[in-house]
Image 1 (cartoon, helix red, strand yellow):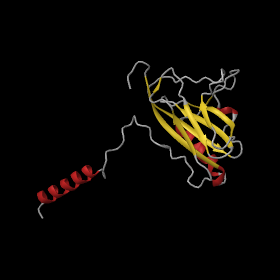
Image 2: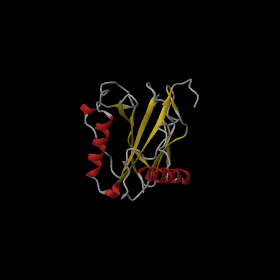
Image 3: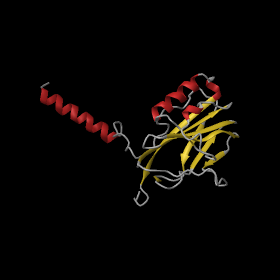
Image 4: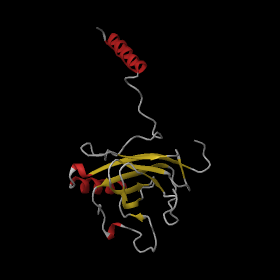
Amino acid sequence: MSRAGLSIVFSMMIMALLMGGCAAPPPSPTVPVDDPLRLGNPRAAFAVKIQASREPLRIGASPQLGLRTAANGYMNLYFISPSGKTGQLLTNYPVQANETITFPPTASKKLQYALIPPTGMETFILVITHQPLNLLGRRDISNVKKPRTAIAEFNLSGPQLINRLRDALRRWPPSAWNADSVQLPLIAPGVRS
């Protein structure tokens, strides 16, 4: 077969795949993807899930997250902002199996978290363990001297936080922990979604 003939056959195969849905284009970068950081533990004895009740997120608003686990344990919720700032929103929060926790808690006046610029993808990481997780030292927390600050801000980049999580969780028995992550679009307050 000639070069032109092979080119035509190849083009027809690509068209057939696209029309059949087998070669769908990659998802839009503004569409949330389940566990994009691939932190989930396939050998865990229980499932965990993090979901946003409102998408997209807006600068100045709170994220409104639903956090769920199928086992009793301790919940840790981390964030990576579009600017690369990292922190912890919940630390070893005791949770019961099949209880849905909302973040931020509606009853808490101290625990307020407003999303800050720039726009981009906001990442949230949920980790559930059977025992409290002690991931960070005092030097890792940048706002340690601020009194009554419920949210810990870290001196770690996003990749450093993810690597620290992966390293710490590898030391746990596979049945004793699980994680989930979500990346959600963060837009300016007046922008239509």
